[in-house]
Image (cartoon, rainbow, N blue to C red; front, side, top):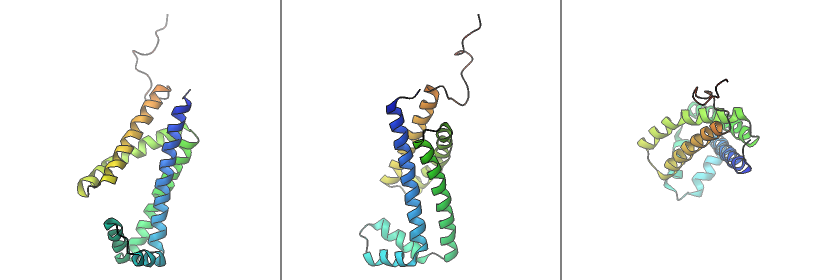
Length: 157
């Protein structure tokens, strides 16, 4: 049975996934609300990346905004499913999170190579740490999906 410390780490990962989902929902709200775009433009954000994002949103076509909204909502739903499943300490969520997180790492690395910044590097590092943690946890708890090695199984006497 997993330790309480292990459960706290799992819950922290779940919260991290829910934060990512919330940020994506904010992207949808921002992309779909002209008034919010106008407010952000008027606020004159000092961060270069925020100004760049606002400029891209302001110049995007309605069709492009709908595609971004749909994709962001889809990924928000995935992250919410992962987050809640991990907080509830469900084994399926550990497998689900491991597979999804591994599948995104190559895309994140590609994006990092194209447009490197510290935040992207930290997200990649966090995602790699999450995958390693979940795989070690699954193996340690005897829930390793590929079974035990034949050498590790007790022999019949």
